Image 1 (spheres, rainbow, N blue to C red):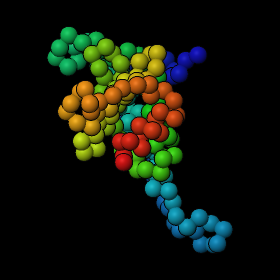
Image 2: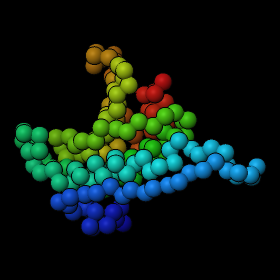
Image 3: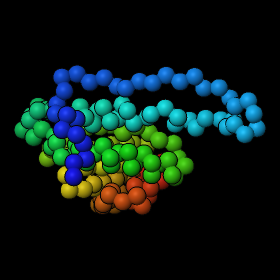
Image 4: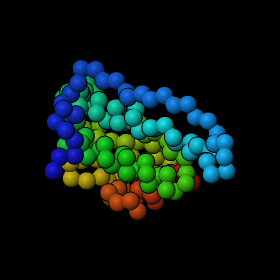
Length: 162
């Protein structure tokens, strides 16, 4: 089962974000909604475009001897970030776009910071794992684990945004 079409897995020379325009008016009757959810726009378009952009990175992309992002990892990263977004909203806390990058093993990576707290999630072709820190001491102020489940994503988001 393929997560993405072949055309999305191929590096593109140029990419453009889909854009939509909306005219939003307050409902005029008692049965019409009075407010629009603040995330009405498609907030993951830019993040998704950045993830797909990883496919254009070549071996040595950071100036060192690292491999290019793995196509399968990138394919898994798109549904993972959509799930993370949904799970973050379920915590009723504000969404923050991640920094999108890759690691030296070719995994896709998402990174967030909030003050002293940092969260990095690595998406491989086999799953998702996280490293989080809340200080400089790697023995007492850092942990890691699985980030594949809705429960773990919600817990991570609550921790980060607390």
